[in-house]
Length: 342
Image 1 (cartoon, rainbow, N blue to C red):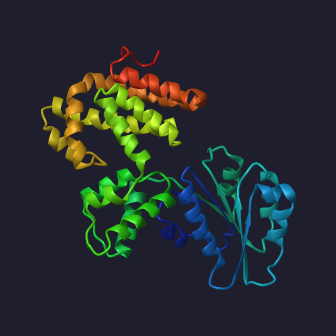
Image 2 (spheres, rainbow, N blue to C red; image 1 turned 30 degrees about the horizontal axis):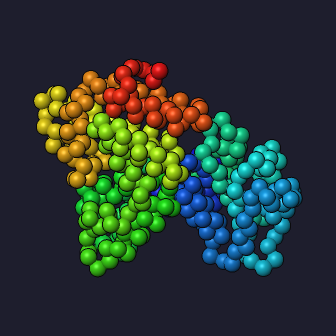
């Protein structure tokens, strides 16, 4: 029926066909998937009483016909039934396709993780006449909208620079990000305006701070500190792929500043143009590190980081070793080679 692009859900729902009775919500952002699934369940429920049925792999393992039974039977005690299913290995797509061919007594909302374009489940919903898909990918605009909405509800204002800094302190999970902004709003209640100091005091955890310390340790050539933070992050359960991605973003910003300086511009102006802009406490270090490394070395470093990210995804068991080796290369403990790490 419709494969919606990522965007504000309320706007998307306004264009949803009234005959739509099934929705697939998927993407790598588990928090955003859960939020949108809740909103869709509420949309399908309407204004009357609702019988909300939650199912997952355990339910389907106990009774393979459970999904069909729930969608084919009328609720005895409510005006409308909505079935919310967490997709797993027990969900049989051919059987689901047959189920969707006839009118349903209840609406169906399926939650899934990241799905490839050739996923059978995704293709079924994208091509079905009475179904719709809602991809969930967090981006800068989504985070900004979340920040503005939550702070506005709390009667707080925030300037563009501080908002950009807050966005860098939030993670990829929509629900967790909303929780952090809500916590910030409570901390800043009564002040009228959110400051960077409020963000430092209320938002983020030690793992997030460790990631920032790690990337600046690498670009500053502080091998021991960078490796120490890497161990700290691993102990806290932070995936090496997350750390490497943060390192890639950091070195990209360093290259932009270094390139601007090489072209005759000022470092300060280059930093102001960065999106997201680094915290003002880090700006001097960013400029110093970009000058220390220079355009040429940063150009050599960027493909090394991308190669490490690629290899870590292909070989999860060696993520830690790849990250440590990359640190040694980028901090000068090992000779810099491109494009590989060997």
